[in-house]
Length: 245
Image (cartoon, rainbow, N blue to C red; front, side, top):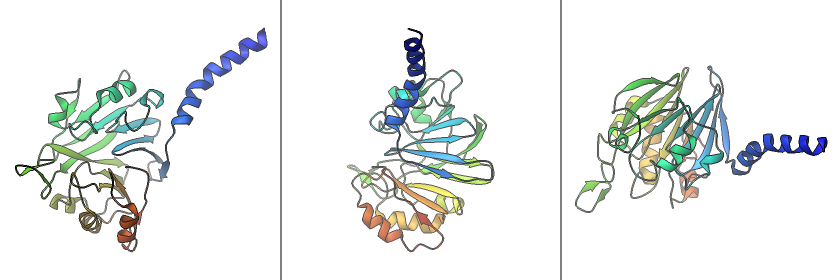
């Protein structure tokens, strides 16, 4: 009886770990002078970063992962209001007392107690410096000449881990404001027509930014073999293809 009781107790402790293991997605570790950053590729534009015991979720979406078994968030960043970037069910699943949520102004209307970040703003959030930067379309339009992502409404984010900068671009094209971000260490750039960049734009953005590591993300139906071939010989840039459709 005692052995059965001990078995049940151990199983109860292991179940959350086993559940997380079954839902685990590919992950990379980025080494920084301020400690390692583990990046989990949940899919599409959804990322989870872990650093010094803190958990940062970016654009969580239940279509990409079972958020009920993922670590709770210290910080949630929402780039803009579209449903594949702002999912209240995912946010509720990873929210805990003390979770900080930051978003663009338009997205904040759907969120509870969100800190609004406008383009150009910098804030210390959950012990991490976060810069909000522009993300918008210049070329790709809806019918009626309305950009899929109008200027000034959505954010990209630059996260500072000591001297290491990780840029998550959000839904954007190769906009001129990227020039100010040249030399970021890691860049997540979207390539998914007609909403974000095509491969030519991605190539131009990569050459403008020159990140040490480039992750194409929000890839949709883009031919990733063509992306890899196009960026293969970009000097000083390591392109890493991960499942981020």
